[in-house]
Amino acid sequence: MAEKRDYYEVLGLKKGASDDEIKKAFRQMAKKYHPDLNPGDKDAEAHFKEVNEAYEVLSDAEKKARYDQFGHAGVDPNFGAGGFGGGADMDFDLGNLFTSIFGENGFVGGFGNSTRNRNAARRGERIVTSVIVTFEEAAFGCEKEISFSRIEECEDCHGTGCAEGTTPERCTRCNGTGTVTAQQRTPFGIMQSSQECPNCHGTGKIIHQPCSKCRGRGLVRKNKKLNVNIPAGIDDDQTISLRGQGHSGINGGPAGDLLVTVSVIPHPYFTRDGNSVFYELPISIVQAALGDEVEVPTLDGKVKYKIPEGTQPDTVFRLRGKGIPNLRGGGRGDQYVTVRVTVPTGMTKEQKELLKQFGETLGENPAGGKKRKKKL
Image 1 (tube, rainbow, N blue to C red):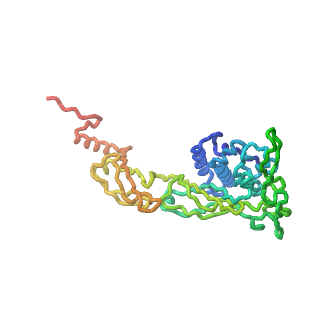
Image 2: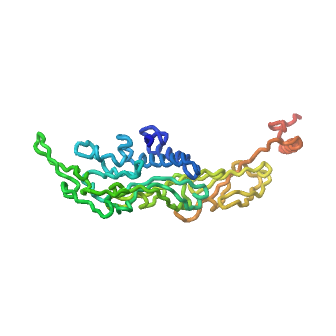
Image 3: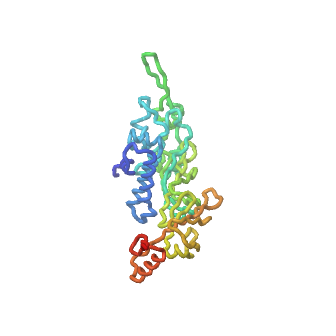
């Protein structure tokens, strides 16, 4: 198995990057490697998963702090168990270290927070991923299928961690509490403190025959696909929260949420600001001077619009109700059309002569500048 890359390196950042820098880098990398934009590219798919894993850690303040201090070990499920132990000699509080990072062979176990809460029900971790949509899909809404990995209760043991036909034994050392009382002699007398039970590692139970599928953890990693409803009017970089679609909870706790960040592909000629759509309409100097009826592209298709006589460059017209639908309902924005008057190039000799004659009727010197009046 290849060594896991530094999460900051994955996102092209330096350690200590701000939340905004992390978010911006994630969006850029997610768009670059998104499977929808790289169909059939296994390398891009692998990079996309790597980018999502890095962002899931660095976008969470608690996980980021552990990663900055301990590296990958700080957010690995084995951290705080076994050799680290979470014992009394640790000079920091491990907190809720249940995480969504997996080993090569799948989920490698949760380990929970301090001994006081080890057996308490805890909410599952969130999952962060992204989806790419077109400008029109964001405007009018759509349904997209997304793929992600999720920690779920093991189907073979139903979360007990025990092989079929067996049950866990209550730890006799801690009497199922997961904690033991330790005494230590100090200059101030004998001090007592609660510590994680070394016999059951704080679980309060002993599993003699662990489930072969989850290796006694009660949880497994699964690849999931889910159809997500993209609401009409959603904008670039907005996030859809799907409650209960994240990682499974611990000790009967509720599942976490699935956060889907929407990335909108730029349109070739429309731009957006809120619910307003902007479009630049090129017209000739003849159309601007004499007026004309033109076709203007909109999200609903082309519409006819009458350009008034004498329209000046950069004039803005409004098409009511042709913008982006309100995300929370209640109508649509408008489309604003900016007139760009184009100057003809490559004119023939005859066309140039006609234009000079037209300039003379306006009192202009065909060679440039105002025509001088003759002195009497």
